[in-house]
Figure 1 (cartoon, rainbow, N blue to C red):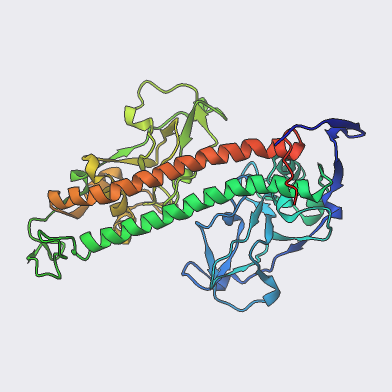
Figure 2 (cartoon, helix red, strand yellow):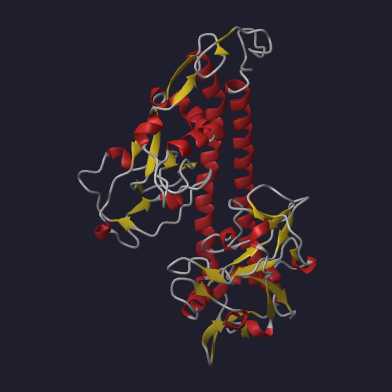
Length: 441
C-alpha cells in the first residue's frame, strides 16, 4: 500500500485517478421469487432457500440458519456461486442488515434459491469490478444511505431504485479496484478457513464423544474398544453402562450459573463491558455483536458474570438449550443466559460436547415451561440424570479433546483480530486514504 495525492473536485477532495460513480449506471437488481411457505422445511434438502437471516451484520454470508425447500419453482431463481445478493427487508430496530450484501457460496450437491426480500445484483458495466462492488456494499457510508432512505418503522424496506441512487467515489482504473478487493477478500478467506477448520475440529471431537460415551467403545486397558471387545456392562436406570461407571446428576460435572439482572436504565450504546443476551448464544457459535453495554459493574453482580475467553454459554429462554463458546473480552452475562462452569477443568471439552447432544437438547426442551416463550430453569438443568463415566476415562478423553478446543478458541480469537483489521481497512481503502498497490503483470 502507498499514499497518493488528492485532487479538488465539485464533490470535494478525491484521490488522483478516482472518479464519481452512481450505482444506477453500473448495476441492475432483480427481485426474488415468492416461494410457497407450505414447502419450507428445516430438514436438509438439496434446495436451500436463502432469507435475510443468512446475512451477517455488516455483510457476508451466514450459514447457521438454513431453510430448505421441497416444492417446485422456476429454475431462473437458482443462484450461482459468487452471486451477490442484498437484503431488501430487515426486522431489527436499526436495520442491522438492510442493504448489506452476501456472496453465494459454492457447495457441491446443493442449490441456493433466490427468495423474495432479497435482491440479486447484475453488473451491466465494465467500469466496476464485481469483488470491489461487494466490498463497497459493505461500507458504513453505503449502509447509512440505505437505512436513512428506508421505508417502514417496525419492518424496514429498501428497493432496487433506492439502492441504485447511491453515489460514491472509486478508482477509475479497474486494476486498482481489484487490488483493493483482493486485500479485503484475502482477509475474509482466512476468516472462513478458520471457521471451516473449527467445524472440522468439533466434528472430530463429536465423533470421539459418540464412540466413547454413546457406543461405549472407549479404549480398554489393552487399548481395544471396550464394549465390542467384551467389556463388562451393568444395568442402570439409564440402561446398560460400562462397569465402574455410574448415574448421577449434571451438577456433579458442571455448575449451571445464571446471568445477572442488570438495570436497563444503566445501559449505554458502547460501554466498556458488553452485555451478552440470548441473541448472542446461537447454535454452536457466539454472535459477538452487542447493542447494550455498561461502563461500571454493579456491586451485587457475581464475579462469574464477568465472562472469560472460552466460557461455555447456555440459552435459557426462547430457543432453549443452545450452547456456544465465547470468544473475546469484556463481556458480561445477562439474565436468561447461563454459564456452564466445569467442576474439573479436565472435563471442559466433555461438558461442551455433552450439551451439544440431541438427547440433552430434548431433555432441556421437555424441562422448559411457558406458553408464549419457553424458559429453562438452571436448577432443573443441573438435576438432570446422566451417565457419569469413570474418572480415568474422563481424564483420557480430556487430554485428547481439550487441545482441540484450544485450537478452536485460538481460531475464534484470530478471527476477531482479522475482522478488526478488515473492518478498519475497509473505509480507508474505499476512500483512498490508503491506496492499494497495483501489481504489474
